[in-house]
Amino acid sequence: MAQVAGLMKTPQTIAEQVYTLLRKRILDQELLPGERLLEVALCESLNVSRTPVREAFRLLQQDGLVERIPQGGIRVTSLSLDELKEISALRTVLEVYAVELACDLISDQEIARLEKILQQAASLVAAEAEGKAIDVAELSRLNTLFHDTICSAARSTYLNKILEIVRMPILRFRPFSLVDREHRLRGVEEHRQMLDMLRQRNKGELKKLTAKHVGDVSSAIARMLSAKKSF
Image (cartoon, rainbow, N blue to C red):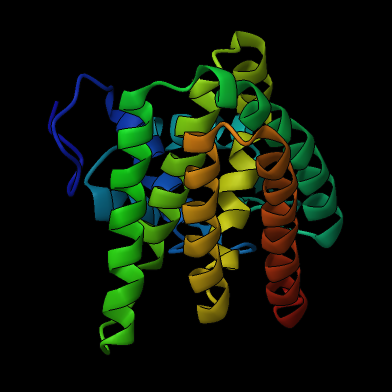
């Protein structure tokens, strides 16, 4: 079978490729909350039959990224302040626990990985100060990678399983927190402080900063959602 246009060759089925592409577009906000996904138009643009598109829709529904609407068809699910509040509360508890464990268990290789991720994020933010357009999707990816690396360093199978449950809404909300330039700068600086505390094994201060960091993210997202009430 032919590969879907724009996707790298992988062992995935056509349906999985369509799912991966649409999932990325939703998480990167190329497809916005409330936007309808037209089956025929997608089939034509991706040069695939209806069967893999319908299977991709089913997988996206399982993720909570799309929903069927009474009039017929599929649309990207909305985001709400209530959902944000609940997800942020869960994320605070889980990530504070993660950094507590990571302080004792993180390896030199993982510290080096965090340094590299931070350098890349700082370069994006610095380039913006020189007049270049900020790549919010890439900065969001780096932020996710930074936090995922710390959670992985916690060496807790059950913690990571629980985090996987709330991962999708976290990924959906995250780009909204990066729209504001001041928050982008503060986020990079707080990541730098978190890395220093991990090096120092400063568990107490790291837990406090992590809780503040997640709270700041939630506040930034709430401001954006309030300004975009249709979401």
